[in-house]
Image (cartoon, helix red, strand yellow):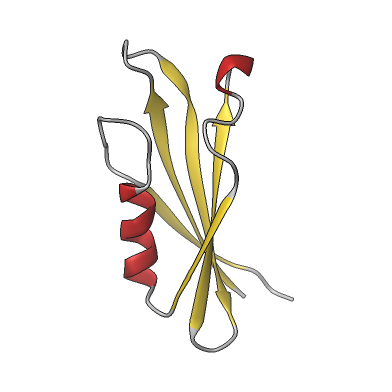
Length: 88
């Protein structure tokens, strides 16, 4: 199974680090990709700025772009993507 993991740091309006936004994209079948969004907070105040969301598409690049545009932060840095291959 192929899997891509994307991460980007999240900052509040004052520029303080609040946690990491993370996307996990897995190949679902032969043509579909499924993306799940997470937020790993360092403080309880920012526990869940948004709940776990899922997106489905047949194009990997569309999901990567969707992750970048769905972030709640005003400043958008570069997303680091890593490809992982799991052996079943």
